[in-house]
Length: 318
Image (cartoon, rainbow, N blue to C red; front, side, top):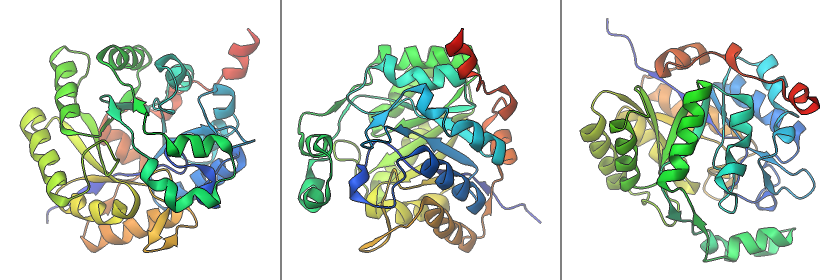
């Protein structure tokens, strides 16, 4: 009897896309991020994609000290793969964005594969009355945000990963990002298996229509053949629908409050773990098995949790 395919669930319990006031359930403090991460792992997430925030106002931060307030405990209490963002926020330099991944040398880190217009301003009309901090209104209202990821930026991050044994979740917001990745593959800077996270529904990137998803898959197949593992990230209301379609086509999935605040029409998700449980129901309804962290490490050819460096306090003292 043929074995069922193992599907990797990545969970992003907090992050830089959404502002903290938009949902009272979005984790902001280290204690909240820790609780949300452990709950997501318990629910079945094999990979935890992690950001940090300033606990005073929820502003995204790439200060390694803030990551140290929850990373060691996550590693101690779960065997989930730790995936640290190098995206941070569009306003940050690549040097700022890479600090935590360069410091902790995680098994996995995100890497955005191209520059895009990052349009959050359509959301302002829906949430303006709920926002508590001035930076949130500025962030959401701007039509000037460019998420800069030049070829030089990408190469800098790739060389950091090569040096530290960190592999990447290649976040592809549009078709051209796949071609950017192919350029680096041909240059020998990336070795298979590649973990490609296709991002759908960000205004400025590829849309959330099922035909967009199919186009992304066809292009990746043509460029990379069997050398990659595919994953689906649908933003907002598209999260579960695209996860289901993608999983039926062979994809892994990503959920979490970073990507969508919702669990159903007009209903805020109370946690990322709730979203993990819902996507598990979808996957198991398709007769697919959920990958454990150990299986995810094998599938993605990761270096192992024991190779992460969490001695930040010692380095800081030195």
